[in-house]
Image 1 (cartoon, rainbow, N blue to C red):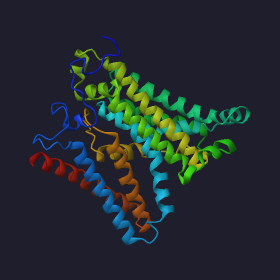
Image 2 (image 1 turned 90 degrees about the vertical axis):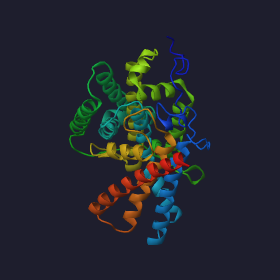
Image 3 (image 1 turned 135 degrees about the vertical axis):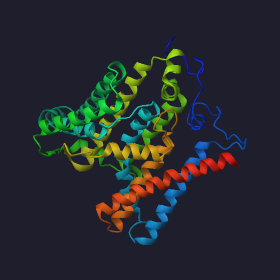
Image 4 (image 1 turned 45 degrees about the horizontal axis):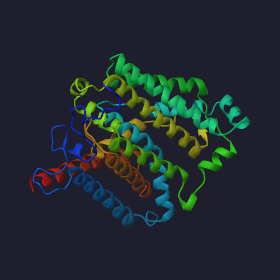
Length: 353
């Protein structure tokens, strides 16, 4: 069957952001069984918006510095890098997989993009060499993950866990356990700019999220991602090349980690093997809070963006109130569970009415 054949042509349900919200066997148009015409994804996202609003109110009440424009930009800058990484993670999880290596791949890409050789090329030709190196390293790591999982039949958890250890170790070897300083003027002039008062890092996050939304909801690639994650065997019988598509998903996650690496270098002026520590857990948490099923076949980019904003705002509120790291971790875990329960309650109530 031709690659241009759509999932609908292949006899599979067209599960875009809205329709997929009801799962592989749910109503195909994403409306509630009760016929009220309100997509379940809208109900879930409304719950996330309410949770985000509660955090803003709490932050405003408990800290005088929270509701300032500078602090809002700080939250957005912090959300930008983990947000880009989470977009790639969203595709992988909707496709029925998991990627535990994105944080380590980000670290490896940042180190490789800040080696003496890469920086010399950037000085001699153009700073884009730094970005290109980060993207190539991230994508290559994603391709290796995809090959192991799709064609080597290695369980995603094990394959990406191995990549996590290998990428972090390779980053330490390349950097010799040192922080590599980047001082390319053109690179920082570009990433440090703030057109219309909006940091470039935030613009990149918005652009990646927008492209991800279009890919997931308006292209054959997105339809196939939902189909593979919902029922890989049915997708295979319908003619979708499941192995190749799985490879693409992990390559995409690696590419997003590479973009995150370039953004991390811009934010910290360094490449380091310690960058992106535990980013894989934050990305998974943001994706799950956003309503994406860990079992695959359902999810949305909008939900992931809201999940990232909730986690980042939560962290900022904790910092503003001088909570210890231990207290932050404990409270963050409770609030993540509460957010998920709130989503489920709203969705269940919507179905019952």
